[in-house]
Length: 223
Ligand code: HEM
Image 1 (cartoon, protein in one colour):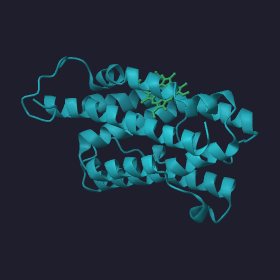
Image 2 (cartoon, rainbow, N blue to C red):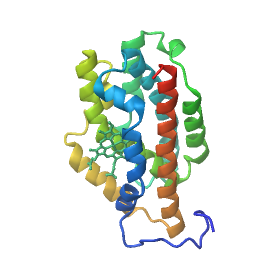
Image 3 (cartoon, rainbow, N blue to C red):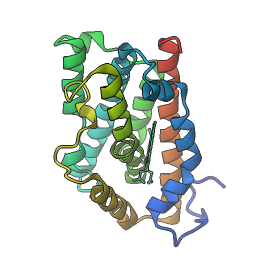
């Protein structure tokens, strides 16, 4: 039996989806934190070019993620998970213009693992459970560990605001209550057991896709 069949047995139907996601991706999260590229970003030994390349990969990913969110919202099927406060594409574009110049679109490259991540988002992003999995993985990550990364990047590369605005959420005054609301929205989704299983399985796919991007970035920068 696969995780996508209707007969799937939910191992813990009483557990809220947000808790199932946290538990189901714990090992993937630890592996992402331990990836060489992320470790080098945190300890300051990654050259600025590596961070700029990361921003270019994030641009491609968020264009696809946020296009899927817009399609779901336009159809009225976004499960109230699409928030204007979370939209990242304009901030990444401002960061890339600051870091690479006005011609950043011609200078930013998309690595193979990023292209695969974008292809996955394009393929499954119109399915609310799978969109939820990808949005959870990125946005709750940006609101959590992303804030740690921001401080490290600022400290190690002397950046302030410009160039790291991706990590700023000016319309969100307190991150913790916002994350709680996001988790409540996840928990309120009306999903079948099979769809719940799909969300957790797809979040694990999302983490793996992120790790593959980190691996490509590490290779591209000789780490
Ligand atoms: C150095 C790197 C990282 C650090 C230090 C870090 C740290 C953290 C911390 C402290 C939390 C808990 C926040 C809370 O409970 O409110 C968290 C949550 C989270 N992080 Fe990370 N993280 C890192 C990298 C990543 C990466 C690379 C991703 C995925 C691309 C990610 C995705 C998430 C998600 C989805 C959550 C929410 C977990 C949940 O409560 O359900 N993190 N992170």
